Image 1 (cartoon, rainbow, N blue to C red):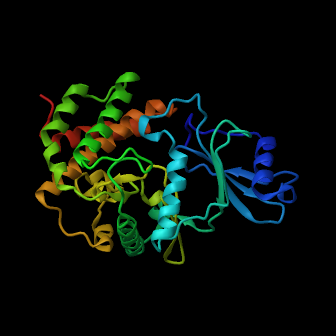
Image 2: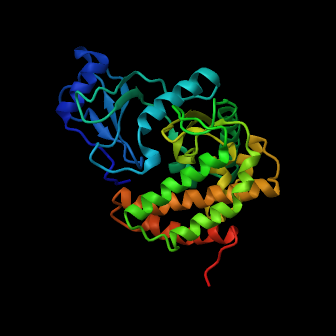
Image 3: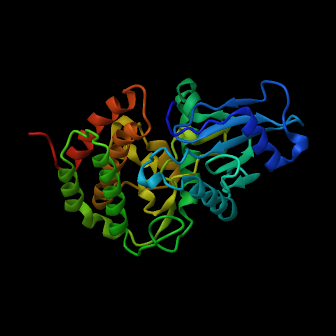
Length: 328
C-alpha cells in the first residue's frame, strides 16, 4: 500500500543500520539483499538478508516532517512496549526484537529489526482458503486476542500514560482527536463535525460500564496474522495498542457492520457471548470511531486513489444510522 508515511532509505543507510544492529561482519554486499514488504499501510518495512544468509525485517517509522494523526504519534515506541507485554505476559506468538534504535543518528526516525517470519499472511491468502480453514484460523485468532486482552493496565489511555480511571473520558477524547485532525485538514466526512460530536455525547453513558483497563490491540485484522500449517505462527504490527475496552478490537466490528465480514468464528474462539444492549451501543460508537479514521486518514496518508475513501464514506453513514442519525 502506498503512503507518504513510508520512510524509505537508501542502500547505504540500510547497510549502516545493519552494521549497528548485527555488526560489520553481517553487512550485506552485492545486489538483491533488501526488498520492501509492500503490504503495510503506515511504516516502511524491508526484508533484508544478512551476510550469513539469515533473513530479518527492518521497520522504520514515518519521517518527522510528515504529519500523522494524533493517535499515531510515537507509534513505534507503542509497538515495542506492546511486544514486550505480550511476550512476557501471554503465550501468544509475536516477533522478537533483535535491535531497536531511537537515537535518530542514522536516519530521521525510530527503527527496529526483528526476525523474518516464514509464513503466509492470512489477509492475503484468505480468499484462497476454504471456509472451514478460514474459520479455524479466526477461532485461533479469537482465542489469542482474548489472551492479549487479559493483560491489565494501570488506567485507561496510552500505554505510556497519562492514565485515567474513566473510559468515557478517554474514549471521547480519542474521538475528539480524530475529529480535530479531520477539521484541520478540511476532510469531507459527509457530516457536520459537530453532529458527530453530538451523537457521541448522546451515547457516552454506555462507556461507563467499562471499569477495568485491558490491553487492546485495536488493529488486529487478519492482515496482521501470519499463518503456517494450519496454525497462527505469529501476530505482527502492534503500534496502535492502548489500555481500553476489549470490545474495541477489530474483529468485533462485524457484529454491527456487515461490510467487515461475519465475526462468528472469531467470537467462538474468543468465547464472547451475544452482546448486551449496552455493549452493542458501545460497539457502535467504536464503529463510528473506526470509520472516521478510515475516511480522515486517506488525506494524511496522501493516498493516490480513492478506493479506501469510497469504501469508508458510506459505511460511516451506516455507523451514524446505527446511532440514530440518518440523512434528512
